[in-house]
Image (cartoon, rainbow, N blue to C red; front, side):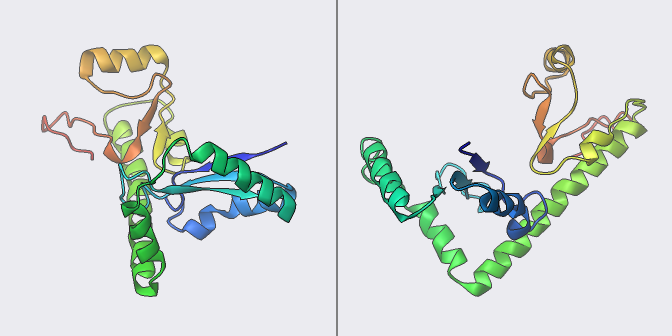
Length: 189
């Protein structure tokens, strides 16, 4: 077993990146080796900067040397000069206690906002007359929301109302909008 962990939204689940990494730390205690793909693009607002890292937990120093050797072979043909701007932003923020504290506060505020948006969505669906159980929306964490809609329901939303999401009903929660029937405007953002 060689686990590969994708941690693209660390901090958006609870608002605390340390807390969000609990499962990773627990897994690392149970396995000899793993890979972690970590992105800072979203948590630092660095979209398009390709800012992240891949980390490997190895069984011993010899394995770490072999992994590093193979990574160098793989990486070299892909790029000779990786993008630096995003990495320098992250390094600057995490290297300064005051900036780190501000970033953590901002990240917590964003996570709280997303959790609030989830609750507002469920409330507005009920207020609009939906009798469906939407509690699964409130039970989810992170940036994405699985609506529970079928592929056919998603297709109808796209065709008739220009509401777009993946065919399995996944949507980006912070930008969900619902038209207000009384005002004819978007009342949910």
